[in-house]
Amino acid sequence: ILVLPGSRGSEIRHLMPAFGETIARIARALPRARFVLPAVPRLVEAITGIVASWPVKPEIVTGEAAKLAAFRQARAALAASGTATLELALAQVPTVAAYRGAGWEAALARRLIKLPTVILPNLILGENVVPEFIQDDVTPDALALALTAVIGDGAARDRQLDGFAALEHRMRSAGPSPAANAVDAALALLRQQPAS
Image (cartoon, rainbow, N blue to C red; front, side, top):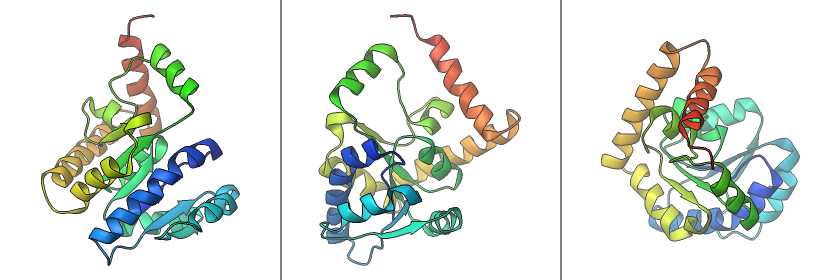
């Protein structure tokens, strides 16, 4: 099970406590589960310091090759919202996404951005395939429940995998590159929003 708390220090600070408690709950339910945390090199020291107090410690890996190997082996992922959710979707890794920032950031974002979702695969597909938890909804109970649903075989996992197959098809056939397609989809949604 992948744990991707983000690539910025603020994301790490805001998400790591809930992520640590979440994987502890998953480990109690699935004692044989292995947790891997791909980290950007500049944050390894901070992440290592944070996970030192966790009851369940993920294996921390760095580098693109290690990250891709972890993606290939993953059954599911718990990830910060952002480009990682798109990478996971294209790698066919069922995901639960979360975002928690400073209160002022969330208030500003709610006023400026009126989108039904902040998760890139959901934006591109036009439907909420990846469960997302924002701000106060980022709780270990909620994350563990959603993550358990996509780890096991069943409707939640199948729905994501079907959505990811559609996403891959759309991104391969719709334009010059997956990144350009993601930007185009996000911009199209933003253009549909009424001005505040």
